Length: 198
Image 1: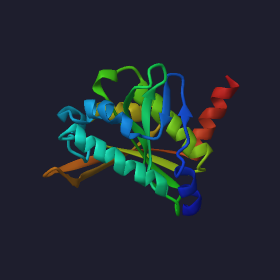
Image 2: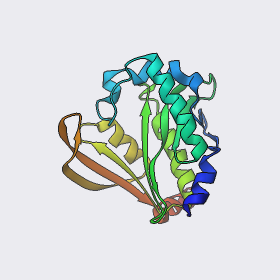
Image 3: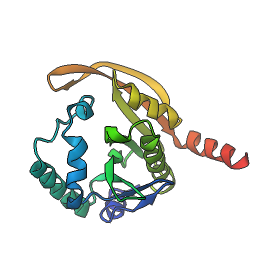
Image 4: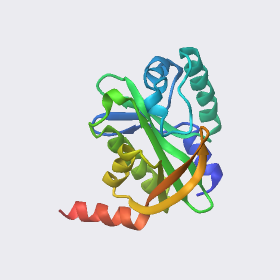
């Protein structure tokens, strides 16, 4: 896919729907919902960013994200509960390599909504969009060792573990070992065809 086409798609980020969720662009009105989880130390333990220091910081961050959407170079959705319109996290592509048709997905969820399969539900829809709409060839997901919950989501999505890169990232002053899972389009469509025949 050409970069221009990708930017056009995400300059008006599509709304995606699942059984329980709506994936839509983040908005400044989501600030309180986002701050509810983004301010918590345990949420960012295995992430590259640190907890949000204040609600005003979250508001400024969302204002910045709105400007990125306009440019079409930000590929992350708000995860919103369909029944209440409450934002409970984010899910999307942390990067898209248009030369190699490769995407990397990431997700974060408010701990109050863990153990309900919501992260996997959101990520499965993002993967579907990646293969069916963006025509990606490969989708990856990465995790820091110790983040077993994130690794479990990757396995639920049918991704295959490809290995560890030992102490390959310096994160918040410590070298972290990173694991990679991936799925390629052939595997995705093959599994989808099997499900459709059942």
